[in-house]
Length: 438
Image 1 (cartoon, helix red, strand yellow):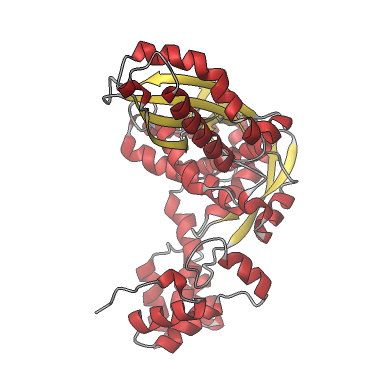
Image 2: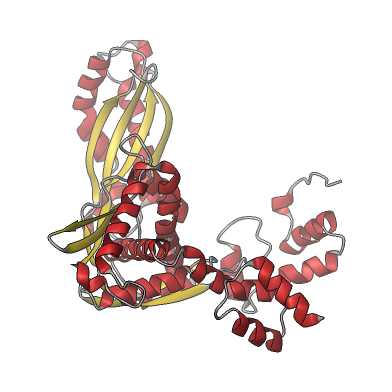
């Protein structure tokens, strides 16, 4: 039976590992060896990783791959991707190569607005609160000057500040709704610092506002926090070509392929069960680049899926059409990303990834990330509407199965040859391994 532990965070790294392995493993020394096997031999580098989070015991590795040949707005990029799922990098690279000979990807940043809110309770007349807000708005903005001055030098800062009455949804509930421009930083710390200062000043000014009654002067700030829903921090990615130019080895009838492809997208537009999987494929590409560049993929995921539901039903992020013989496939997606601050200046591989991408601005990174998501979606839909998705995926998965069963070099050679013209399934691979070993 496992026991609770007191003061775990105060234990040394070695003591944490000792407690963990003794408590949860029948062979503590073997578990300790596994944990330490993933430590970096460079002590300074290991310490850097240890300090990213709390209670660190080891490093959890994910593969970092490259998808080359992305032609975006006339410029080639090799895109770093961090992901564990078989066939994602291969699919992105295949799409990139396909579209590089058909005009490449076009990407446009539509807006870069980010949102933060001060959520508070006010017991009193809403119109009186609005009058108060109008009077103190300049004071509120001035109070953040020490926080925003450096961002303002870079062309960013607070763009707008409004009062929102939400009492129809929740008694006494109001918001300060603030929009920000954070330039090349994702801006979470900047936004939250501004919001906390606005909340503090709001409370102070209310206490000194003569027109408020005593109860109205006592504003209750519930919380001050940025929003990861950024519907106005938006980037568009698209590809287009003549329908006949879609032809390739597995697309012998480009008109039929294009029509089937458009139907597949329309199904994802109206059917949530399909849309979730459809958008998950887009996020395979987006998340992999977001991770590689040290950005917050959980924030991106939450914001993107909220955006996919903005019309009241979860729907496809991407869209497709055929008009006047031209096939067009596009997507608009909210992405709040940064290329300075956070892990971007700390993690050596993040710095390398940004170097590979040509040290992009935040807007350029938005374009690259969106394009990778669209490329991933194109690859998935091309497979689904032609050969089926499992053929390519399971051949990539073959290596994982062979590793799981510790196949020898000879076994690998024989098994790979066998499945050149056969469908890969987990059961069939295991059966072949067992027959070879008999």
